[in-house]
Image (cartoon, rainbow, N blue to C red):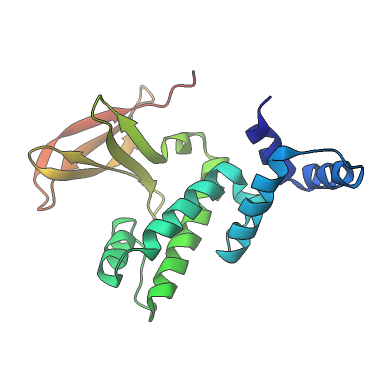
Length: 187
């Protein structure tokens, strides 16, 4: 049984109606408590669970926790990285709200465009190195990841003729340090 799949379907209008009917008849749905908690947390953070789905919502909630632990300077840097303006943000909470809105928009776009399966935080290697692929407010996919010598490398991913996403990777000062090719393959 995949309770995650049941929970994901329960957030759709039809799934919600079926879930409510089952609960009315006393059916034990152990995954429903998890979904209820997720739904409540999404409501508190203004994340439309029914629009983004449970996987994206869970990711956004984790990001909200991370953002809440960051200072204003770091939050603004995070916004700049995804080309998100904070000029009209007065308080820290305004910046977090802007990031949540951008995350919701990314989740909506990801559902509509297949290449958005690349968007997210990825892990690889025996030492579990993390890199991110994010969609900027301009619609471009951006790669960012650590390098042992040069710090963080980043670049804009462009689709080539062989359906690979390629980026020229630069370090913080803008010097080109290499290239990367990515492609999402369903297993």
